[in-house]
Image 1 (tube, rainbow, N blue to C red):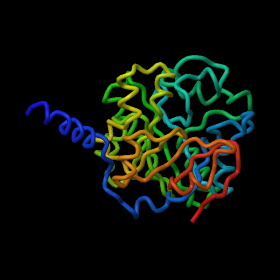
Image 2 (cartoon, rainbow, N blue to C red):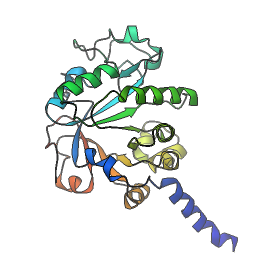
Image 3 (cartoon, one colour):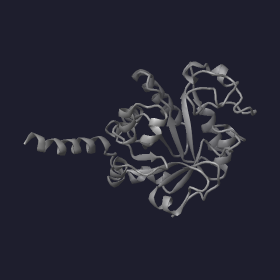
Image 4 (cartoon, one colour):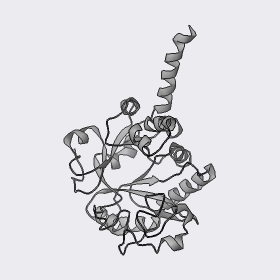
Length: 282
């Protein structure tokens, strides 16, 4: 008898973990059926560079939504920068969270005249270029080693900065603990869980167990996300379950040739890079 109860219990436990938040149509509306420029409108040759003021200005002026990345510098200033380290995009090396803002703000992005912008600068520039109507998807970057107090401070700082932005904005993260923190701090804020495939997580060196849990959204019970931001690979059973349970679905990152009518029919938001799609559909 006990054995007969194990499988249903496991299935119920999995469903509890994966279940998204309740549907909130009014909160979703500004983000639905829209294209979002990944790190702004930047070129494959990094001209202009990703996550630069020029790239964000161009995206807002063109009428696109924008996806951007934010994290702390060593002195806990909010910088818009994707990588954990400085190596790929600047001539410096080392972790972003160990670089002071005074030093980081002087680093050229990809050998250009652009430098990493502060979140406040980006919000002001996008508000000007987009007339205060550009929807923003703000990804909070988080490392496994960051303690809970660090994550709380980072989430609070981002929420405080976004309070000054006149347009619609939402927050997403690969870290379900961050999504859970936003749920507690700002329950009215639209929030999303980023997820990559198991294959991609393993390729990045993630241990098989967390790779499975993260790729199958088992942390959804922490944040009860409004939307899932899923990679271009086939959806696994957990992502399909969250979709069936009412999660808004966003796909990242679409490259030239990947933006098809079938994707637009299945997803309410598309995060794109290196091409110029239609801004909205339906």
